[in-house]
Image (cartoon, rainbow, N blue to C red; front, top):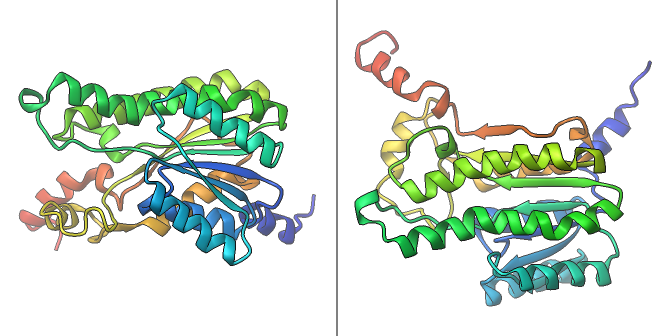
Length: 270
């Protein structure tokens, strides 16, 4: 069987006719995902609690001819999710892509983490994704299937010194696999992207950047556009046979950063 390379390329980069919801899309990684997916032809609903930034991004991209709208979304609110899905249905009548990108971080240890802050983080990072998947499933099913991408973390493979964040990201991996099995018959694929250190405006001055970079085998931080490229692939038809998987994007950190560090320190690696 011959392969039409134009079709292969289109499968990777052409999202024409697809509609996407991107949570936490007003800035950082989410905003980069909005930019890339809309550039590839998707109609994108930016969802965030950051109204001024979200509306400004939507206006900027709309002015350049892209189909982009903004709607406020608190991912912990079932009512907000219902309103977003109804708005997408009224706008385009179809939904092919959900990117559960919204999330926060605590940076506190167990004995210094209040129950209230634990619950708030888990509600946003994990329960918000659960509510979102449940909310979009009927419209995505009616649309003939689609792709859900949960933004987890490489902390979901280790014991990061932020227990609430770590637990939420481990939980996203479990939610991803369960959802992938439940919705496979509907043509809905569910995968998780697990970034390592990604530098954005939100963490550019953080003191943990240098030690993390020094431990990363590739010896640099990742970029938001690199995360967006992987999200694009998983949202595209090129990934039509991929579901229930975790994709690490961390410069080799989880693959063996600690062992590599020991090898360098002992002279095994130069």
